[in-house]
Length: 297
Image (cartoon, rainbow, N blue to C red; front, side):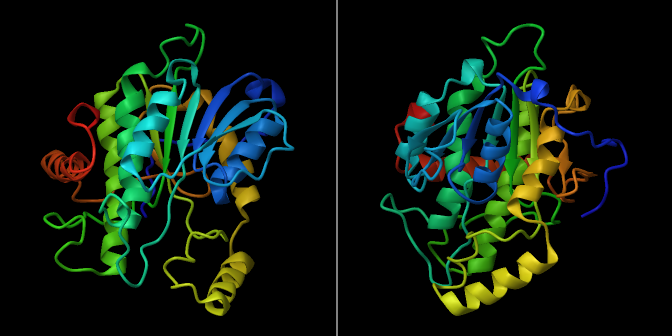
């Protein structure tokens, strides 16, 4: 990752007054980094709606829950329709897994990592994009969308077999989800000029996301995550660091920026040209079209 010298963020402690009353949706907010962000924001008075499969924060005030299986595009479409996009200040996408050693397929016939970690986000963003921020007061900073992945990694993606129907490599498939999410930031920032759209690269943080990639080997998973936990910040520490950035006035008119886990701006990956992004997203939408109604693609 290379630093983007065009943006400098001075870290400030997040005051409750900066957060109180903000309306936030965290897609993937029932676990890992999404849950940590949801809890940090809710603890300071934001009204947070989390989307996922298992709700663990029923005892926490200001957090509401929508159950959804985001491996399914029709479920992603339902979530998009349910989200009160008109009044949301922040939408954060954290849902994700790693591709498994052997190819896994959803009930809709899509490669599972691609479906969960990228295509579901594409579907939801297409659904909520035109409605984002319509009911926010003129004095607000406007709606912001944060897409978590690994932007700035230098990957460009491989077209022609995004669903891995012809051949399968776990790392190759996962890199396509990484690239897809970075493209989603850049493309959405271009398409929705009245919405601030940003990419987040959290680096290595101890969560459950790698369990799928390690093939269910509990011992190996414990060792790997133990080492990651020793050398990197916790999910809670990451959330505390990033929340002030996500609400900062400094982001106004800076849509399309990408950030590392220290809230420092990083440059996009080389090779993500406009024609390449268009071709990649077109193939992605064609995959979604295989399982969804045409007007929702």
